[in-house]
Amino acid sequence: MNQPNNAAPSLDAYWMPFSANRRFKADPRFVARASGMYYYTDTDREVLDATSGLWCVNAGHCRPSIAKAIAEQAARLDYATAFNMGHPIVFEFAERLAQITPQGLDHIFFTNSGSESVETALKIALAYHRARDKGTKTRLIGRERGYHGVNFGGISVGGLPKNRMYFGGLLGGVDHLPHTHDPKRNGFAKGQPEHGAELADELERIVALHDASNIAAVIVEPLAGSTGVLPPPLGYLERLRAICNKHDILLIFDEVITGFGRLGAPFASQRFGVTPDLMTMAKGITNAAVPMGGVAASKAIHDTLIERADAPIELFHGYTYSGHPLACAAGLATLDIYRDEGLFERSRSLEPLWEEAIHSLDDAPHVIDVRNFGLTAGIELSARASAPGVRAMEAFERAFDQGVLIRVSGETIALSPPLIVELAQIERAVETVRSVLHQVH
Ligand code: PLP
Image (cartoon, rainbow, N blue to C red; front, side, top):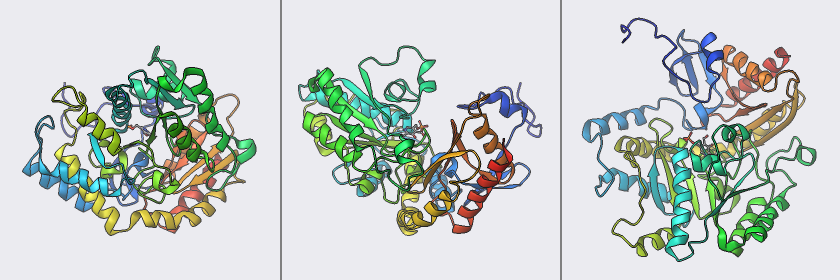
């Protein structure tokens, strides 16, 4: 039965995603509105957003120009199918995006999320090899500790055990590179860790085992985010690129988190000077105001699929909401903000202060590693022997109660503030983390 409007809703009907439902519902925390760097709870308490929502509100919350663009677009053209039909704003948005994607990745396929972008990129890779008569190249290579969303392709190439173990056999024909986390050699590293480039050579071992003629693509996050912020070792991505080139294997960067200024450049690819063949994006693409994702493809991939098609429809793939007009309107307004406020440059220039502030936590209680790159940080805690993961969860709850939103994944606290963050807000976030680490046992 519907609730009357003024009654507080029951918490029963809503099944919360990726959440401790029982824990939340026993002691709920609601945010009711947001502005700039802050959320406001239902009791109007201010909470500093040190995580950009979920790595996505890169320009800060409730930007008026984005809200206005969405409202105007909803009144002008709410929806049009993207299948064999067009509306001008989707072409305009693709063109604007192609101006900031890495050089050569100029063709944009729209999706509605990071997970869909991953599935799309994997499917494009397979279709590409088939279109050039290399249809045996089907094996997909992911990486341990990788996160590529929650759909079947993404969890198959992904490397987070809990995200895989409940869901059956997953895709066949998938292998994994080793992860790059090596606290013994790289503990408390500032920026890119020094050791680990040679881990990319594991790809040679996989190629030797299966033969390159059977391998379609390698997919990695340039900086692994969801697993707890693992910047790539110096030289690692370059080596992966070289091995992929040598064996005619496509390299896919999953830039769902690392795109749109998070690492001090439009995309991680530009920051690290390594260009993939396919690149996923989402999150910051619309400042998270409307769900959207996309895949940027190289000219070679795009042209091969278009020119060699054996049917009028060149790629049998797409979503009802691919290139949704409201998302495009939000995206254009978002790109304007990034450009006009120089937010990618701002992110880069904040890095030294960010790094110093974050590493002031190196000696805080329970901390066993601290990592940073761009405007990201991972603060890894020792697990409580009797209850793994609970210490970090308690730190999250206490930080929220003390006015700062942080994120935890496993034993790691991850911070990734909007790119408009001020120094005083960085200091407040760090001091709150320090304080809650003193409070949890
Ligand atoms: N890929 C990466 C690297 C991500 O970090 C995420 C989400 O955090 C995804 C894919 C999935 O994105 P979504 O939750 O929008 O499906």
